[in-house]
Length: 121
Image (cartoon, rainbow, N blue to C red):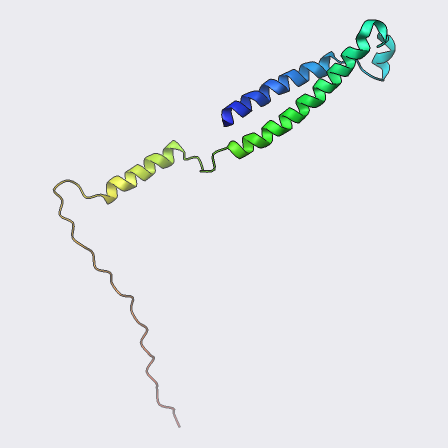
């Protein structure tokens, strides 16, 4: 599901770039050289492109949020870490025919009270 969302975001992004590039500039120096927007229904095309741009922007935002929710929550493990974990398991497991001697836990040395020295007169 995550991959599908990412593909849809990429498609919407490309379509939005194309819609922005096709639009006529509303103001600025370039608009002085272009034809009027009122000739032969160009006004309706400009409205459609503007609505399409806003719709694609909202779609990209919504798909990005949905992709975040669909993302795996478990952390990715690198191949090196997987091999290290397998090696540790192999070393911890006894070999075939090997006798395993249980290890006794050595208690920590308790602190001895210091010998009191008699006070000198």
